[in-house]
Length: 170
Image (cartoon, rainbow, N blue to C red):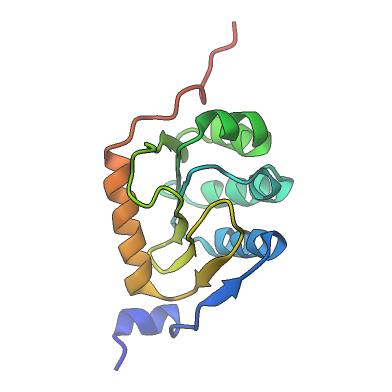
C-alpha cells in the first residue's frame, strides 16, 4: 500500500524511454514546467538546442518569481561551453542570481558521462551518456528521484562556484 505522501503526489508512472533530441527537449520543458520548489541539473555540458531557448528562459523566470524559496541548481563540467553557447540560460541566471546557481562539476567523478535532472524530489530524467539523447524520464517516482537528488547534493557541497558566470562590466 502506498504511503499518504505518494498519494498526494499521484501514483508512480512507468518511466518513459526517450530516443531523440527533440523528445528529450520536450521532456525537459515538461519537467521544468512541473517544478514547484527545486530543479537540480547535473551534466558535463548543457545542450544549447534545449537550454539556449526562449522557452527555458521563460520557464525558469516564471519558476523563480513564483516563490522566494524556489531554486534552480546546475552542476556543469564544461563551464566555457555553458557560457558560450547558452546565452539565454546565462541571462536568466544573471538576472535571478539568488535563485539560479551554477557550480563547477569536476571531471574526475565516477560515471562522468551520466547526466540527470531532478524535480522536487519526485520526478527525474536520467541520461547514461550526455552525448547520446537517449534517456529515461520518470514522474512521481520519489524513491529514485531522491536517490539522484542525494547524489546531486553530495557533489554540490563539494563543488566550487562556476567561474565566469558573474562578471563585472566596467
